[in-house]
Amino acid sequence: MVRSDARENRARILEAARQAFAEDGETSMNQVAQRSGVGAGTLYRNFPTREALVLAVYQREVEQIIDTVAGLLATLPPLEALRCWTTDLVAAMRKKHGLGDALSPSAHQTITEQTYGPVIAAITQLLDAGKRDGTIRADADPGDFLQLTGALWRAASGPRDRSQPMLGLILDGLSTEQQR
Image 1 (cartoon, helix red, strand yellow):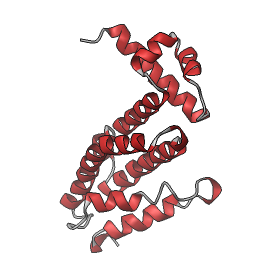
Image 2 (image 1 turned 180 degrees about the horizontal axis):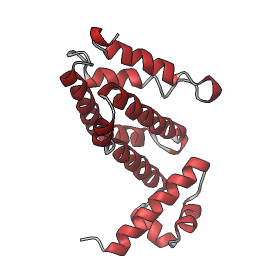
Image 3 (image 1 turned 180 degrees about the vertical axis):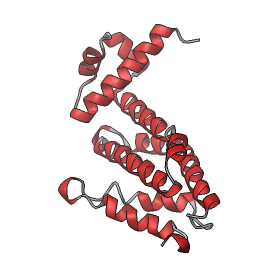
Image 4 (image 1 turned 90 degrees about the vertical axis):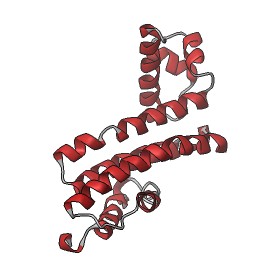
């Protein structure tokens, strides 16, 4: 069993790293240790390499996004919940892509393998809610949706960000005739 102080240190490290990497993708391990208030030994015991830390930060972000599905569905119609959830997923995908130089090809593969199943399960939950209420086509496939949304993180960000209009087109394609 992991001691509570060890869990707290790990959580502090991940949060400090998330903030630091968002500000500067070149943040060093020592900067993360200082920012999280732990020694270098504690940092390296939890994350032996910078790549391991980057992967853990991304994994945590994906888990947090996945955990929002139930709350979104409790407060929004399924198509709107899917729009909000996908927007958050795209932001996380952009961050992962932005850290691309820090990650080896095998690390990219690892994170894709670790997150694919849970992301597909979350998309399935969102699509199924829309299928049940008749707003999403019965033939909507989670894998197809994920593949289509992969183009969204590549859409230019900033003032020419095309991700929301593109997401609108994808969601229009999912809508049943009665919704159009």
